[in-house]
Image (spheres, rainbow over the protein chains, first blue to last red):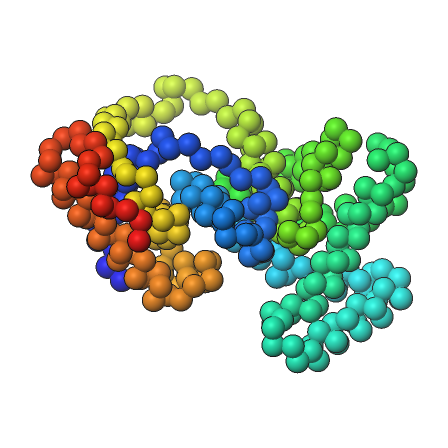
Length: 132
Length: 187
């Protein structure tokens, strides 16, 4: 693909001309939803407009996606340090995920969902404690 | 801190790795010492519980996975903290002359771009290609589209820019959006 200097300069002219257009920084929740590909289309446009003006922040999106994809392996490793019952449960869940023939799932979709649920439960436990 | 230590300890234990990974790839992190790196991670957890867990309460599991959200939050907090750090002072006599030169101020672009000339997706594709220097395959993977779509959107966007700026040159100088120029609407 041709990315010549003229094209680069024209993009920079466009950027300079639109730099004053106000864009509101999306919340962390919106950026996370965008990273997880669960953002509604109308919100997605606003996030992409902001990211186009702040392209360095796209690294946050990529880092978040890496974290989510690496999480099942990290969580599975830590489960061996937990009690034996947790270890057996995680092994069972991962076995089900590997044996799943649901083509609508992402490659580790079923496993990710269950382990994300477990991660969520950890957060909920903090917020559900008395006094919070 | 209110609440049972157990739940919070499990949270910290479970997500320290996520936080550390999140901030490790931030620009400028390489200049941060080990102690400061630990402080940055601590700052993230402190921010999560501040003001009665205000930030942690914002997490919505229906919208994103915990590791995704926490990575975004951790990078945002750590980035702010790193920006606020006092820069290391250098005696002015030790700074090379060329480093002290002030670059010429580029005149601000006076052109007024018609709203919606490029779609948000087109803008993002051009930003990733020209400012992040990503190649089309990387952009395609990042945006969950085909590489051919990246190329075609790139071509469409550049065609619009080329025609628009050519027309600006023809009409001369500080062109404001006119009926003719307003045809450069998003497609």
